[in-house]
Image (cartoon, rainbow, N blue to C red):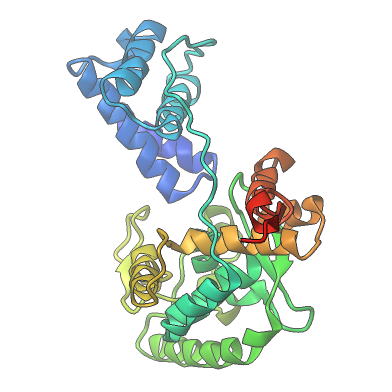
Length: 324
């Protein structure tokens, strides 16, 4: 008799079947654990809408979590019941965390230059792509060699947020530095192959369809990690060359902003905000910017009109009109 798989393993299986990211997998498993522990380790099969509502309300009222965190918890639990337990819940009535209306932190062009001047090596190249192409940090780190089109000056963003592909502009000023960087990456890949390694993780479907693609140059990450590691989703002992970890870039940008004496909270994502705002100020239409950013709804892109010069910054203060 085949033993029934444990619940959390079934969650992992269902997430992978949907081809969701490893980050989503970890988040969904974590929320399932927290939900079970909150209800004194009762099995979700024995619970339902009332218990979910109690848990989500607790997160908002007692846990004081952000609206986005509560939404992620709800998505995870709906996935658990809909896709794993096959017990659709329908409408869930909870006390929702208030979603704050915040404007993005945006750097001036002078501030962007100041931060970039204090970066070097791979971190510099990544920051230039974040600002020059409007990429999210994860999208940049997941770029593969074949996603960089030097001829057309475009980048292919595969499986971005919402599992969407898109293209965006590739800054001409970093063509030469990028080619030099890829030359070094290719040497590293050659050395890996010589030592019996050289594999890169591929999406499950591609790995089955192209079993030899994992060692091919075009599938390698543009920004590889310095170390080899195992596939967290795999059962084998094979070592892979993953992409650089986000924390490496986050630390470098934070330190550069500190040295540049920027009086704002600067993260890698700040470059993406600045990319959108500066394009808007340059006269590009909102729909074009929406496409470059990969926003599903133009309302998301519209937030940048509030910080561009055509918004409040475009109004001349009456005080400046006075002769003091």
